[in-house]
Length: 278
Image (tube, rainbow, N blue to C red; front, top):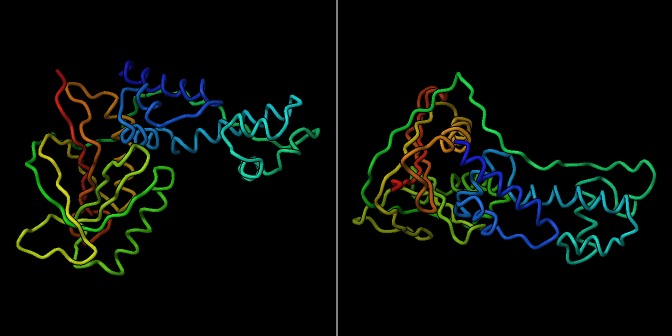
């Protein structure tokens, strides 16, 4: 467990060492020996924010410290921390600190500070995580998809489900599928298992989910709270102690069962693809 935590902490340290340089998610994830797709999911579950939000918070913290303690020009600080113009920097600074950059040097200026993260895994009792590792054959799904950015997906995907419920296109919505596109952006599908003897409705598409091993986690309770709770446990408790397997494939599935009579009895699943380590 310690080795995994240390590798993830190295990626946090890498961010800290390069806040005044361009940062690419592929480079950050590579330090932790993870794909960009999984790194961002793990980071969000463990840290409660996206990688982009964390980087912005740290840059805004350092920018305020620099403006308040030196004679550096606002434009120079803006460029140093990745902003193309003083206007975009000023807007971001205002959102974070509540004041304009030019006010940062005034005595008593109210500035905010966001400290660097330090990852720690603690053992806690009282929670059971039910899962099994199973082998599944290749299968095809059919559904509607939309592209999302990791920084805003937690807010935007529920809206996608709300829109789908207005026009389901005949889908039952059995699967919610994240498919990686290029590290930071990914496609999210609302889908069912594809029946080849049925026509594909207009606006829908199909995609193949490869055969392989899966960790299948059972979630019981009201949605989306039960899924979110188990998802956090997967990345913060289960993965750091995983032995004999590693993550495989840049995709993951949420599997929805028919609603229970009582919301607290609703069953759903999270599927994570795995492969055996040598």
